[in-house]
Image (cartoon, each protein chain N blue to C red):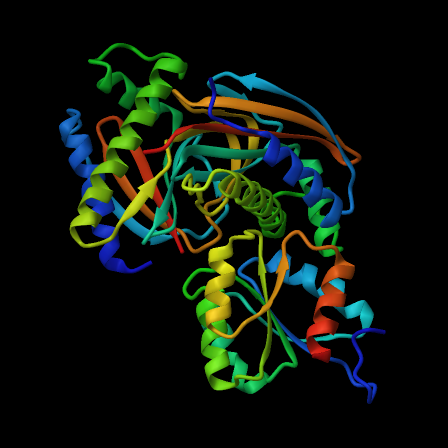
Length: 152
Length: 129
Length: 157
């Protein structure tokens, strides 16, 4: 993936978190994905078709997922990851990707996206698209999270 | 043995697909019939790069691949060698893809899924032409 | 009424299993699926954009996925941690969805559904959630175990 397309994804996530009262968000790493296994129980995927073709996956531990959902729902406690917090996390991913692709559009890159889908489970092995995956690590008061980008 | 030429030597095939499993499937279909897989490539750019040193009789070329897709790669190879025999493999029977391929001088297609025997017959037919 | 037509995906699944994996598959009846889809442990997802926006899912157990990978390459696999099992699942779902949307796009010119590349998730206690999509599933039986397909989509812009 062309490195100039990475920044819109980073700033798309940071912008969205700041808008949603998670101003402590910061980027903590950027690396190629080396393994198929993930310890993160919650993964929200969005597909992309157009000038960029691939998938973006927001991947987070369940604790971060519950904390973020709680912040998004005005501090309401989220002891379980049921329908409401799952909907909130899908909406968050939609906003992050929407923000990122509107920046890409300003660079002349046109992308259509799918609705988000949230996958949760344990001991997961994942392959995103079938290409090299870039992992951008972030951290905020709600906990650590990462964005996986795999475009052809 | 459909994979052998009149002189008894194998028909030489290059398999281009981004999925290693699909490349193995092509191999599994063709090798028992005597064809030789002389090269594999995981994207169009790789295929174009190794083409000159390989010179296969027939190329099986996936359409959708990262870095450089199969249509562009096939077009580039046809520019180097207009007589090169190339079979496009695709799960999409779109007329757009066929029209694009034809404009690059490629007229042979194999729609995924293929039965192993269909792949054997197709490669032989294209080689004979 | 739901925009989702699952029949072309069912037909494509039967054909792919028969031609490519030399496995007969017995199809069941379409049934509506709720917001949550419970996985059998191995799931391939292909995103849809254009005339439909949503997801195609191909789901099975990890053991079944290993058997199908073997049918494709002739090699033995005992775990989904082998990358080739993931590639095999991705390719099966890619071909099924490619065949199915070609049929649908040809029947409805202008719909222009397009596919994102497949992704594969395998794990324990796995479920998928998508909000506000109409979702339909068909459970099928094969000698290697049950296979379920699901299409969840809404009308695109």
